[in-house]
Length: 407
Ligand SMILES: Cc1cc2nc3c(=O)[nH]c(=O)nc-3n(C[C@H](O)[C@H](O)[C@H](O)COP(=O)(O)O)c2cc1C
Image 1 (cartoon, rainbow, N blue to C red):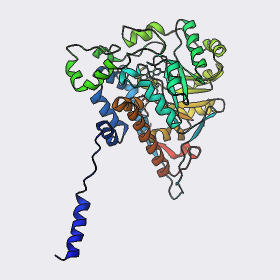
Image 2 (image 1 turned 90 degrees about the vertical axis):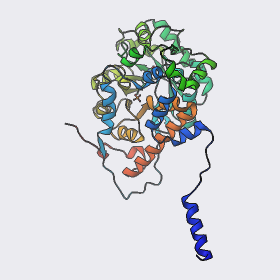
Image 3 (image 1 turned 45 degrees about the vertical axis):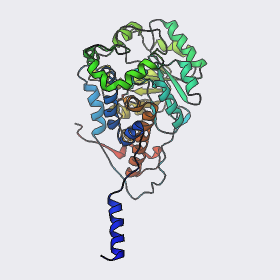
Image 4 (image 1 turned 90 degrees about the horizontal axis):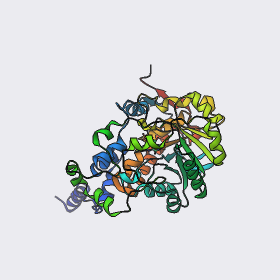
């Protein structure tokens, strides 16, 4: 072999046996290797006790709503247009009068520090850094004032469950106002707790308890337990401690007698933007607007409340037709991919929210994991927009979507 021949061969070998610089930080490596929300879900499952993972992952009863929420997004086909300049696909949107860098926010979730002690700190700070909204739940595990302190430049929203004790609700509203939260979300699909059978079977307590039975589950998840035992104890954003199950707590606190009439009281207490979450029919969307809502969130609570509820994706078009001129239509439940967000926006939704996609990232790696969730969703949204041939969210129209498998 000539000299130049052996040099070429050496270069060829180098190309094949490329030794990559190892990423020594285990968490960073794990997260970098997660390319989808489902990859994050696998990591989440490995790292979180079964009862806390199932509380997040599960739905009500036979989990039909949970499955159908996903199925709805999977049963669409795009009508891509080609040969358009898509160099600068832009994901920004004006939502309720302010700019959001992405058409997506972090939905309110209860008991978040049970999934990972970084909890609302990770969520609110990651959202603030991206320029997207973060919603703190009444059942959150960080106080209203603490979220305001942790993410002072964030667009922080408070989600209210109307309590039997109206004075307690008023106090929460006033605290949110004083802390600078500009929007109140009132969730209306939890008249009673959904029947979450995984929690019943796991005997879920908050925080999870370590028993002889759960020891085998705890040993490979020792980091989670170490965190729980050494970080700030789990406390609630707006209530004193609770010893019973999640379902008992919801049933004790929430008021099943709330009606649209109660919004007269609420509108007197709260003069900021008002969003009603958990709307599942066109009629109720109209009543919500009449009751003073600036936006409705079409949501079945991620399939955690009524089983066999409609998939919110299927409600978007008719709701926009009915109230689109008077209020914004947002949607959540089942969003696990950036293409899902693009689908919802194309059908007419103004904005989308994610619950589990954020929590899987959180459980997989705290704040870094939430960042990974947002990275994944953002790059999926960008790529989808370019591949269907649009440059901005305004260019998305229902004619880019075709429903398949729909009778
Ligand atoms: C673990 C968990 C806790 C939740 N807690 C609340 C809550 O306290 N208040 C609320 O309005 N919605 C709550 N939700 C519902 C979310 O706000 C959102 O509607 C739902 O997660 C969207 O569906 P997705 O998980 O498929 O994205 C919760 C959802 C999950 C997964």
